[in-house]
Figure 1 (tube, rainbow, N blue to C red):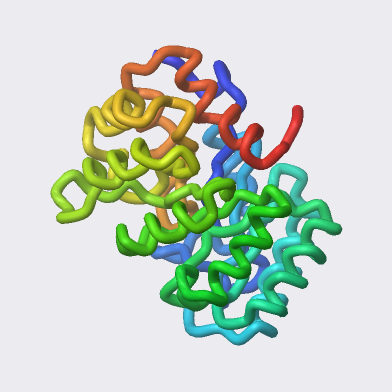
Figure 2 (figure 1 turned 90 degrees about the vertical axis):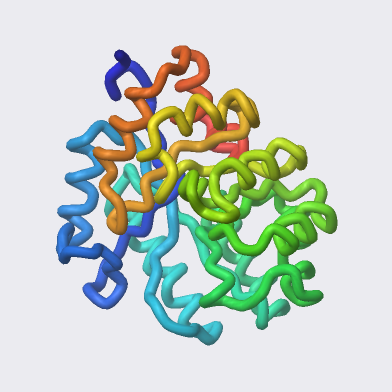
Length: 259
């Protein structure tokens, strides 16, 4: 069995925080960003990627506040790669935010949460995603309805869309159906954070269904355990080259993040 030391590990889905109100840990730990960073490094994660979340509906001022908190965290924690929020109800402001964040060196959008920040297959949402497409920024989406995903994938064929969470085997639209959907659209990818990986054989099945080049490692830390996800992935029967793609190479390619 491989170990974290055999690979560069990039967690493509997590939610760091600077303030207690933005800490979505289920059981209160980690209690600070210092603890968050230390835990990621302790289990063997080299870089971690994602946006700051505060639950509840958001106006655009909240979006900007969370994005700038992510930039501040990046400046303090070299292992953190910021992801940003947009809002489907504010197309002009979101497009400007995209350009402002690109000027700041941001290379990743999401995890986008449609249930908090507006629909993205609406005309205004597609307008924003078309701008992200022009800027070659990948978008990590919380998995929504199949029809919404397919609509976005068709209207934005050059937008790299990373779907978050495979879902459980027993869900009506869980891992089997979601991975099939990814395999049917060349611009869809799956990050393996959250539910799904705990079912033995899911990752091997995902590679066989989609190809290792369509999967990204993620944890959803601090909602989910970074260590459990990492060692769960490592325990599956994949080749070294397949693990390399999933653990870091796919993220680097999609985010234009060279070594």
